[in-house]
Length: 231
Image 1 (cartoon, one colour):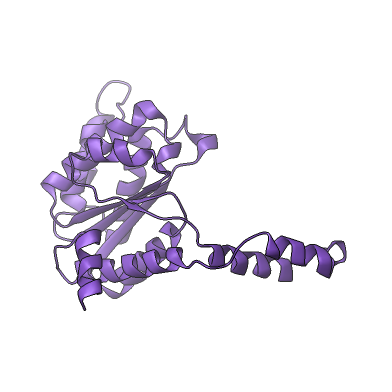
Image 2 (image 1 turned 60 degrees about the vertical axis):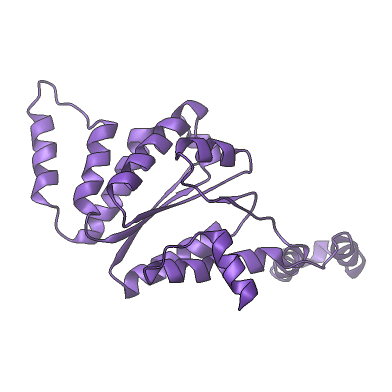
């Protein structure tokens, strides 16, 4: 999992590109603080299952039967969390799958352990599934506890050089350039030291690590970084 900064969108975009080229699936869910009450564990897993089913082209008969059996109950009955977990054994049993959960720290605390318990069950049942989680640093402890030590945490932060580049790009695209003079622009740019590129390095290495995993290697981030330093 990534903690503490940006970079997740780059890796997710890379995974989506790889899904097109290879026999693999990617499903993503983003937690939004403003919608956290509605983003229940069932809704979250249901969204991931729906994305994976869309990629199959045809809904497996077992899934169809599951929905029909629920409808036959008086008044109908919604799928429960365990039902959704079991659906992954149908949609991801034979296909490499990445489940991306962005901003888990924005999820309600009482829901976080439910979600992580469900993800741990999925990982135990399906060796071809990988889970990619992002969030602020404090969520790393929760993820480590919820996934039973399976998680590798990678802390990152925006490099000063990245921030300067971002600011310059924004200033060039300013729709009210008359409000900015050269003196103000210099003050903005000088207030941020530009001497770091750590974010680029971490994201570059993460993308390279994902590539090795797709090739079937069993690696974690830190052992992979050690390999890079030795090469």
